[in-house]
Length: 405
Image 1 (cartoon, helix red, strand yellow):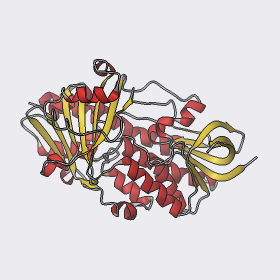
Image 2 (spheres, rainbow, N blue to C red):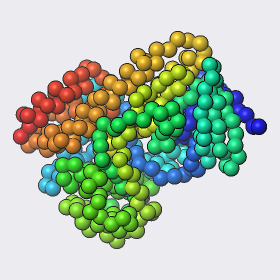
Image 3 (cartoon, helix red, strand yellow):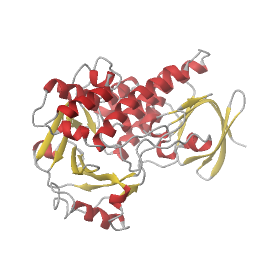
Image 4 (tube, rainbow, N blue to C red):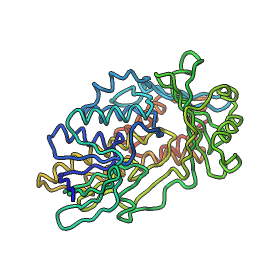
């Protein structure tokens, strides 16, 4: 029986897992990363927000990421018929990074995974967790790794498995999502005729109706990501075949209709049903859930990788303290901290879909101070309580939406 012994097992080699691994490698911790899939692979979460940059820096990735020459993202464009709302991160409230990247996640995730391997972290690809058990001290994890059954003994598990949601399923932690019945479909094209300026450089969101929107994300490698998000009932009107359905959906767009008709998709559009996820608890005795394995709200403000890296980094710090016999208050230092940020973003996502935030975005008379404060939230600085749109997020959004005109 092959048995691997490690202090910390990380499940998942996406940004959350690799940021956790990057930090722990810098502490010379005993770690092992297992990943169900083989890289590269396509996934959503291609548009980052500035808060991520601090996490990549602390985990030791900024140098290797800078070498990739990814498309820099300085803000975001929101479009609705003849209306346009642009948020510039350099004009946000407070301190912090004022740019980030738009990244093809197949390449981006592979760069991170390869870098931690070069730094000496073992990563098992095509390694599926089959069973998780715990005694008083250790986790005993059964893995199917490239058609072989292996066993891992670990003191702590960081679950960064994303949509695989390993511990949520194994430990019965699933909970109803905060946003029901929303799905997404996405693909990429090799775009040979991009427009100049922001229209061909920066992420753009086109509102098709109050609950349905289209994203366009150009990458520096010439590819562009295209995707739709909306209620399940909106998707039901289209063909089951995802390629035919995607071409149909383009006809619903006023601003992008016809622009991509002559492009072939790089891969068959991938549909993700009920994208929002939730759990009853994000930590417990000897484990922590990070990123999408814990909670995922919605793609609309590109918050997924920000929460993934924030939680991955924090979980790694606390787990390292715990295995070194420090007392850690996981509820206070991890769950409550993460929940504060999630609650802020959840308010903005809810306000987006009920129309309040769209009303603010496209108001004819813009208050630049308010816009800067909202921009800081969109940049991911959702723990900065100096910002009234963080500190009193629900009340402030309700107030400005009533004043918007």
